Length: 205
Image (tube, rainbow, N blue to C red):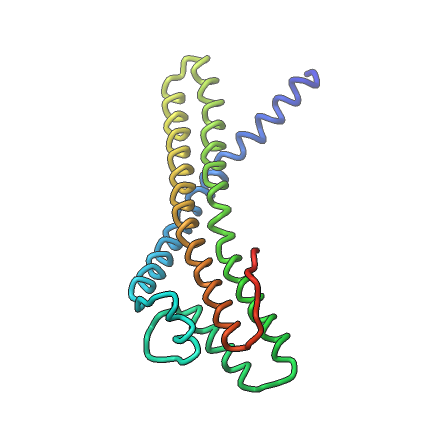
């Protein structure tokens, strides 16, 4: 056996061995996206129930808290933690405030990372799951095995559909959640400026 045939065999074995892991990952990705969908709609429902207010009313609402439910839970928690920290009046309050703001901003952006990766990983897995059985299907076609060809084509097309669907759903969730994160960061920066009297510039992560 020459080196070329050996390399072809080796590549073929690697490719064929990836089919079932890819199918497993697509199933796992689908289940994870269902969990993400539940969390997404729970957050959407929370935001729908928020009290509406004009942008110019926000500084007064933050400075003089009332019973209006204007911000989502994660922003309310940040404001409550900020108030508690500033109440101690320590000399290091400015540094601690800046650190708290940066940590919260970073955590909000990090919350988008996983779903952002699915936008690329889903279609990628779908493409791999398409090409692998297409190779074996073409080999079966050359041997006249139509049953094997049909089975491989079904796997190829279904993995493509699942992968593309996961990517599209993830992109939808990512786009909406990114807008929510941007609004929340704007509000926590406004709250930090108002409550600590230390102005901050807009941050991009």
